[in-house]
Image (tube, rainbow, N blue to C red; front, side, top):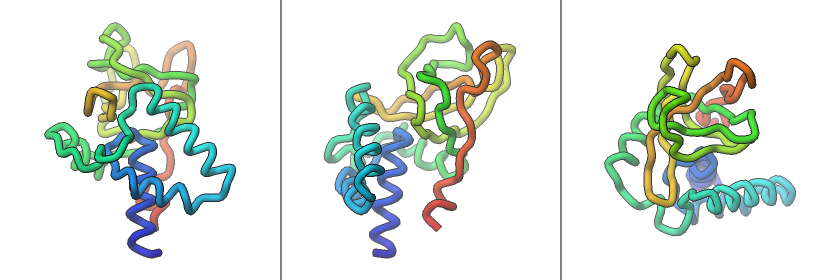
Length: 160
């Protein structure tokens, strides 16, 4: 499958990290996975759709200024996995800032930059929601709860 397989795998990774993606490519990738893994990923994506994540047909072809900026920034980003049950994405890097949306344990997303504040180290993220692209900040480690997100293998390594 070569190039087509890589495009499909990239679409699946984009869907899992909350970035815009082409639904048909994501379905292609899912169809190539073994049963239990496919079912787990389909359940994860369905849960995200229920949580306000836009993943329907045409989402990947919607060009928005925020989406384009997120895609450009994602090249220099680091993938992180959510370790805690749910972690809020906030408007600014502060525990007092407005909570915009959240990500659930096991979700993987791109952290575009890090910022240290008095409340800890925060990661800037771009995610897709039902309303469109959203930028926010996630606390990586909570003083009482411990590690909330951890770095994972980069997509380039997975795709070869």
